[in-house]
Length: 374
Image 1 (cartoon, rainbow, N blue to C red):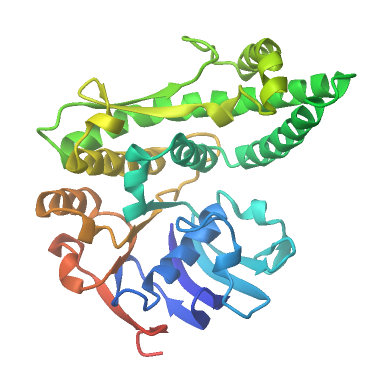
Image 2 (cartoon, rainbow, N blue to C red):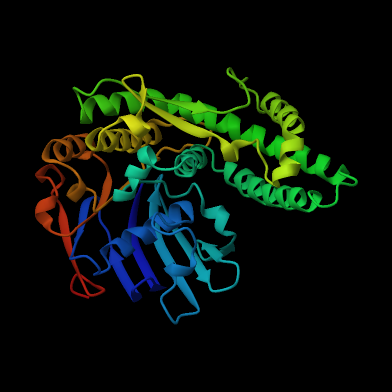
């Protein structure tokens, strides 16, 4: 799998951009603020329908423009596919697949990417929300249909929480709350089951990747942390039943506080280093090694994925966004050695010298929003 062509219109700092991409390594080089990260952010957006830098789509639309367009050609399993998303101010986004109208979510799962960025340190040191997002992104890469469940869960969660807040002041008929409980438990059961499968599949890859990037650092282990049970069943229906029971148990507290206190939105991905929680115990360097192990492990898992939704050309496109400037020489070399055989790597760097020789390839300068010689 690789991206062969990227076109932008009014995306971030670009009124327009048109870039051809080849196999192997491509490095976009430029000082901060020149627009190099905007290019790889656009590729990433077509993969996951989101940015790794901002939580909403608004900042992705160039100031003063009504919309932004991100378009790419992707070679996958011997086919050439055209992906396009239009980001609209104040309106729902639209999409096209091979020039035909599509829903944005229809594009999910077509282009697989794995992103390394300075923000990855928050996977270890940050709040659980970031780790949940990482896990859900992996689940969708492994099972694209789960994107619908995640979207529906967020909608039901908002509705249920709104009803809890209203019920705090008027505790009357709670029949509708019972209905929302059942729907939340059904969706939540499927999400938790998918997360459990993803963690089980990812764990050995994370362990092996950590041994490569920090060979003297001990073991790095991941597990799924939830309040539902110490030993969860595998079936989503059974997990849903446990969640429904839990919702009934905590309802009095929920009515007092006006928040939903049980469900996958409160779970976490636990990262342990040498048996201790990485968050709070790991040094800065160890935290970086854990974050790298999560990303390298994800790449290895997606490359080896043979599940029902996988294809013959499922190796993801690697995106390394200004990450080498954050790493010491040892971690740079270890990361480069791990990834040098990838079919396509897109790198951003302030100076070309930041990129290890093992990842030498095509270098494209980016200056004041101009890409190469355009």
